[in-house]
Length: 115
Image 1 (cartoon, rainbow, N blue to C red):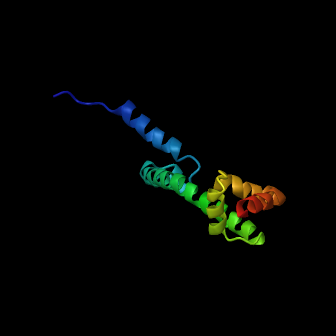
Image 2: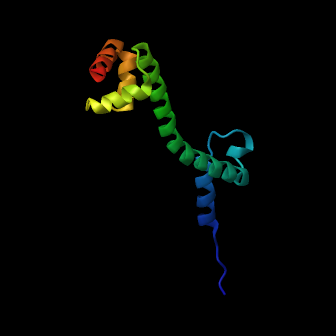
């Protein structure tokens, strides 16, 4: 049976991992075995946190809307319910931006939703 030479392929595989590990501290960025472990963990964290980011931003928007709506005499849940009844289709991101950047417009939206 012929001998299999893996020089090129193995080096490319290792260099790909080391390229991904560039900037990691200590041997995590320079030694293949530790770099491989760190890269695998980093990719897992990145995958998980891309999904978590969506949750975190939604929570932030809800907290901002709740604070602004309470200043206008309404709780968050009542505001969202009355917005649905009034058929005002503003998503949470836009409502939070409105509450932060332009409180008077947000107050107008709350007044329209109340009526």
